[in-house]
Length: 118
Ligand SMILES: [Zn+2]
Image 1 (cartoon, protein in one colour):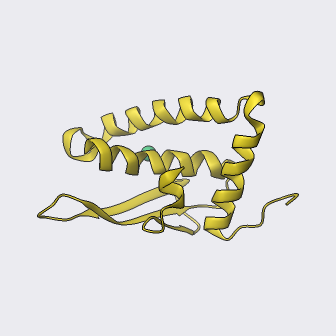
Image 2 (tube, protein in one colour; image 1 turned 45 degrees about the horizontal axis):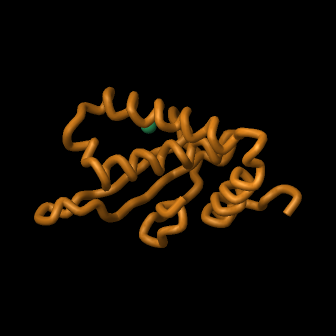
């Protein structure tokens, strides 16, 4: 959620050919700091929040654990997929309807998409 609200993380919608979402960033060659963070989401997909969570986890794992530098692409995807499922079932739990709604509103605001029923 912190990364979602971070103005340094840019998000845009675009029709994508083979993926639901992509994450792009560069690392500062000296400090190794992650910068130029851009998440692209294909809004035609129904599970926009899930895709945003997935792409944010790629960023989080890169920033906190340099997963992109220490693991191969396949392993990174596996780790991020597992974490996405965990978080996904956590916020979609019926007891946490408000949390899900918060995510939907924040994601839609960031992507300039209308929130249904709001
Ligand atoms: Zn991924």
